[in-house]
Amino acid sequence: MHFLKKLFSSLTGYWVYKEATLPIGTDMYIDIHKRIKYGALTTIFDVGANIGQTWEWLRRTEPQSNIYCFEPVSNTFQELKEKTKRDKECIIENIAFGNEPGTKAIRLFDQHSALNSLNDELMNDDINAREEIVKVDTLDNYCLKNSIDKIDFLKIDTEGYELNVFAGSTKMLDSGSVSLIYCEVGFLKSNNRNTYLADLTEWLAMRDYHFYGLYQLVSNGWKIEFGNALFAHKKLLKSLHGKSIG
Image (cartoon, helix red, strand yellow):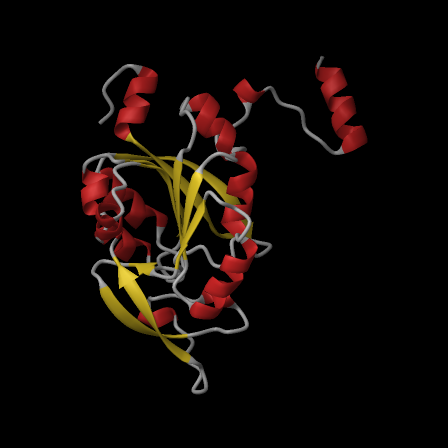
């Protein structure tokens, strides 16, 4: 058997694993549905949706889900709207989430919209940068206004603004109403564009969310710069393993 796997790998370039023996972090959907044994992701929040990159792969794997996409920048929102227009189960909102409701002026990277952030230190500092006023709400307020009492999967990619988003989500998080959290993280404190993994892990652990795995790691050739981390609520892991989790 080992010989056949080795031969297949050398001929095709594919490495064969049984799903049960795949390392955690290889496939998020196997980890969620087979390891954590979570059911359908009925309600998904995509915070920092940009032009719908995450929506595309979520829709392929979770075809029946209600996906809420949040994108505050007007031009980017229009691209998102066009891309998702045939998806009747996709709700798009032209807002950002933060620690309090209101508005915020941001200086934009028009040619690289994925870099846009509400973090003042990460805005475009070019003297000719276009400025836009965007609407900001809290995730807690949005869920209350729209009668959403459970989020199965919360994805956040807000270019260093993740902790602000979480600060406006404490009611949903403290009640365990969010099951799984997936967000972009960095591995060095000096990387202020991506929220430091250790800071995020500590903050979420205080609310009973535990780090589970890393996915989609991005390297510049000699070091890993950032990736996406999955966190699961304590009750999911406790139910899975049948014992107390500290």
